[in-house]
Length: 459
Image 1 (cartoon, rainbow, N blue to C red):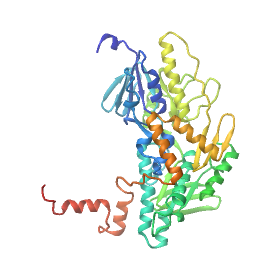
Image 2 (image 1 turned 90 degrees about the vertical axis):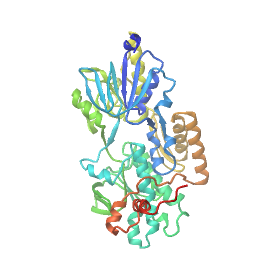
Image 3 (image 1 turned 45 degrees about the vertical axis):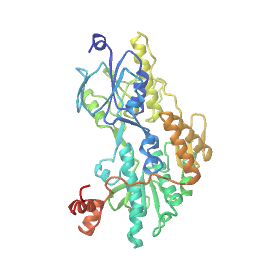
Image 4 (image 1 turned 180 degrees about the horizontal axis):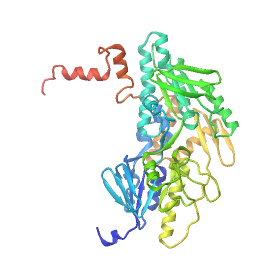
């Protein structure tokens, strides 16, 4: 390493989501020595993960390798590794393959699902934060329909056609709408014994309406759109138990159990593992959901060299407004930090962070969406069209934008969803083996059988 490299200000960014990636991009070409560390080698466009779960898009449509995005930024390197500890006193970050010294640390590791003290539910009710979660959901959704096709008894088949989505925020609403579109519109003619239109999609919310953070008018419109798709909305109801065969809910009508083989989680988040470690090592104030309180310049109290951005940060900007945990906010924070570091290096001051509210939108299905925008609210086809344009523009890479746009156009006119592949281990195969004995034919038993059979002759 040359003397010039040694003297460069070292910026380490943990997390390659919206905040971390946009900070790295804006620091590209600067005089800083920048390292982006993430346990995955790609960025995920989270707002479209539900479309991967519903088979509308593939993982390649919503994921971009960090190296590809940053390849022209010669002062930025990317490392695929998991951060597991930090020593603020020595400015050292520890990860699974070594350690990194930093002059400035930016933590953008986001949040994970919170099951309100019932972490065992994660095994049967996956959430939707990563591409792995989306693929797991996709397996559960399509495996349920495939299994229902195999069952002739209607009583036994019914739980496989019951889909319960817990949480009616934007993610839950989008998931419920996508499954309803699949069952009641897209796959109607694809099965012979089972009618997908018999599927029940239940959307469960603890508040008194769907999209509780939206204006009441938009919540009512969203509820009407969901009802048009056949989604059953259950409000003022909390989930008290989840297992492989169903859900127990407590609401105004008392306690009820719904038999369902597919339960999807869209309620509650908490700080990432590294976020919790950072809080322990720095004494940072934790707020609702484990988010770390930061100052108006996004730094931690007592640690001006450590910044937290994105979903992990609990921030009040210079206008006194609480910054929401949304992708636009994370992008703005990442770009703000890059600008601030450059100005600081030039001996200039930068005002505290100010969030520009761009609103939020939730798509419910074909031609159906609602939007709570800064100057107005919007619903219906116009909202759906605006949602499409915004998300096409927001995707990283012109090739990806074109590919997704062409897929959406094709699927809009044909009503076809192409990526219904059930990859990996199908859900519940162990349980099926236990219920039906060792003779139950599952993919694992078939593979084991083929391994013990007479081998093919050598070519």
